[in-house]
Image (cartoon, rainbow, N blue to C red; front, top):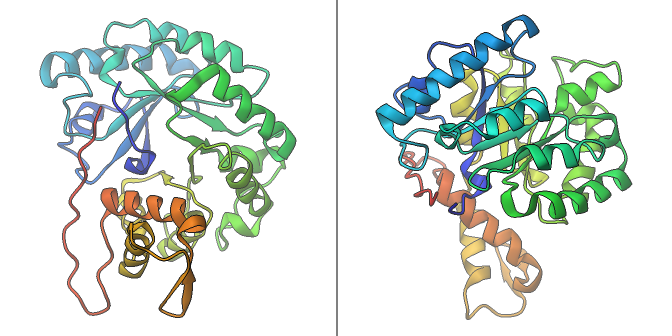
Length: 317
């Protein structure tokens, strides 16, 4: 399994497994700007429709294998499947065509069920994106322990950790206020805490879904806060959010220039640039991440300049 950058995720669109257009999206012939998608068998599928959803997924993967090859040769987005539980994941793990996707999203992962998930998703060719969305997430010590346990149980297969904002708000009996970002709710504690505790352990994290479709400016505001906390992608609930999210991850020309100077082999130990002091020893990781973001999402045009088309980096799968 080749290395995939978590910055390749961009906007991640969730789609119920029962949708009839999944194959078109997987192959890149529909929603051409989409970087990653999740075929959902959990919350987006009613219990009565599970068997139908599994049959639909089996058909889609068979068509993908026979028509366009597996995910390693596709020009479409990264594709993940979200099973309902570890038992379903173990069932899917043994499908012959499951390697037509890039991996699994593991819902509601916690210390209590980590060993079950680890045993269920044993296929070494599949990446993993655990979702943090249970009551334990509110405790920093529990998240520190979970991070260590994930390293041991899941190894290098974890591409990113997904923050389940709506489920975490539900734990508190709350729902997002449509006039504010999540950072003006108790999630304003949770997201920075997770970014610090699990980010320090080397995990990449992605931002929660923004379910309000009538306030794109508020989505842009929340996305900038996500990026300021080091998050590398964001869940999209509707195709209209794909382009704004991907655009938000573009790098400013100022940050790109700073990153290049910091990583220059001849850079002084400390130097001044645009009235800021740059220190390669402490800013090295930031600079590496800026270049990686620019590689996947491009650079914002300077004021008054015409935006250049984004040239997506090649994915080594």
